[in-house]
Length: 162
Image (cartoon, rainbow, N blue to C red):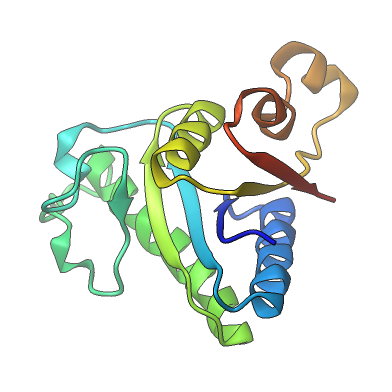
């Protein structure tokens, strides 16, 4: 059974299904650790790094005071980054609370495939759990899917949830 699982989360129906599957596994093996990761594909830079954390592995905490002050300009990239962090953290935490389980929530920066694979290696995860993309065959031909690429690149097992 898996001892450390990472769930790739982007707020889509597929990622919510992946988190549900990870929660089911966690309920069967309560000694397992769960890490839910969402990816910031457009990195603003060190401005959105959290205090004491290297960029690319920033924990999202309930107390958002670790985020630098957001400029008054609602169009600023830092404003969007903060809103996105709050939205993703709240969405993930709601699912965890619903099932009365705990997990760590982190943000990683970069391309989803590479970012999740690097996180899995760094955290020595047993499995990465992701949702199926839902892209059309035409879209997959040109860009591929994160789940498909993770199966090839990840340093651990990858579970693709439909």
